[in-house]
Image (cartoon, rainbow, N blue to C red; front, side):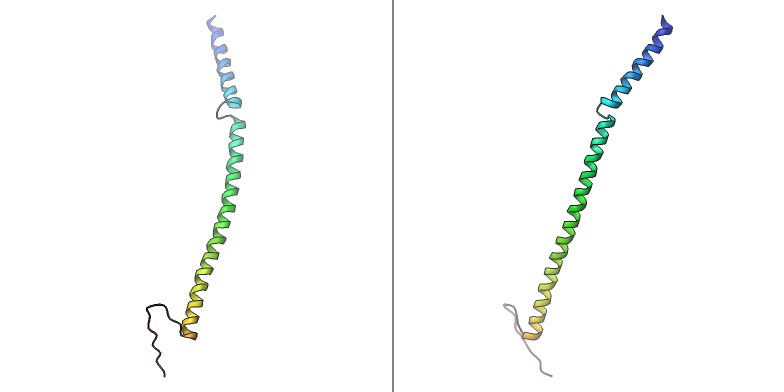
Length: 91
């Protein structure tokens, strides 16, 4: 009788482990679903990163553009800000 218990226990253990592999929390289908979700999130993050980079470039262009306009207005038109005094030295 005891010689039959060991194989039966081993087969039961194998069945339990096999069931966990296909239907448990860390099962193959569940892991595949989670991997697909990770891939979707990575694609979404990459797209958001590209959008962020484009917006950062636009902000940088606007900042530099305004600085360039201000510099040109000061040098060519002699414009000043409030509470500034413009002094021109003739050569």
